[in-house]
Length: 138
Image 1 (tube, rainbow, N blue to C red):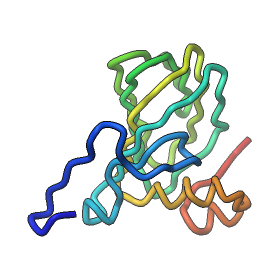
Image 2 (cartoon, helix red, strand yellow; image 1 turned 30 degrees about the vertical axis):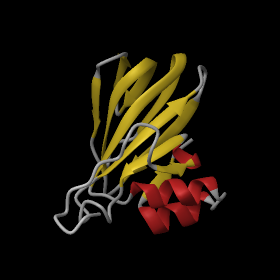
Image 3 (cartoon, helix red, strand yellow; image 1 turned 90 degrees about the vertical axis):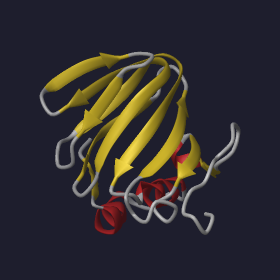
């Protein structure tokens, strides 16, 4: 980050985050804890099981492909230029129904990148829940 607090991440930049299938564009450190922003890529057929973020609101902005998203008792299909909000405390999951798919992931407050790093490292679900307040239900 620059001394003014602003920054730019050029196309193709960002820190690789294998657990999210993409790149970290703005970390919690970069934003003073306000949010994290990731670019995520997923192949057709990808599935993320039902889980709850107890302390983080999560949102997706779809750049390509199509997702089937379950949030609580609601189910949506989200395609290019669609925005999806997933509030903290509500179980959600998704499937990529046409892909490859790309989305921006916005997490408030920031720090979700640490969860994705632990996920990629194979940290067990119980530890993930304790460290990051994310509980897998399936």
